[in-house]
Length: 286
Image (cartoon, rainbow, N blue to C red; front, side, top):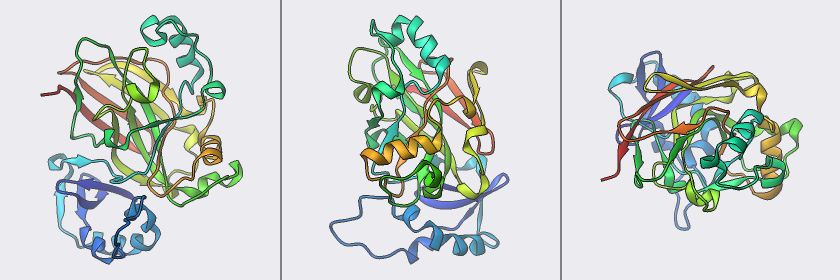
């Protein structure tokens, strides 16, 4: 199943080139009082909601996909977790490009560990990446996004995929510079997730997916997730050793070689096998 959030926070099931509006299932969510949950309540209730959504989708009103404003399919992640230098060829290019390494020795994910991005940086593909400091270099980083479905801690590699709600395409945008990685990657609009959430039952193995990105139709990035240094199960295992993972938490699994700058006016197209593709415009912040 492909689930999207669109227009004015509507919930939809994507069927070919249309969206079936199943927002009425949201009326069946539990009533929450303060203190509100610190996780995404739709993702937390997804197993219960799914049969209702499947039934509704058959007769629900439809919206053409091309006419919809696509928001992030996860509305309220508690955490956005990043995996730095998780492809060897990206390590290799970062060692060479002084605008990436800023004079620092590039090490490995084993050395750096993971990092967090502000959840206020999260947008959907239709909302656009805003460049706030045009004098600096701002790079695209195409990644597989993993959405956690159930609360977990200290998960084993063998059981890790049991805690995944689904997968999306992610753009982990970054401003190059000497500041801390989390700071440079947490600007508003610098975490793009979309175009929808593909539920985990539709992707048996997230470690064999082709990934690609173009800017203005010019190829920039292309790889397969088999080249991840820490694959998806290992990332979940590793993250859950340090954080309690909650429904809706997003793990951005790392970017391959080919990262490069974007400027206002550019159009980024990014796709992942078995998920789909999304187009994101780069604009100047006003």
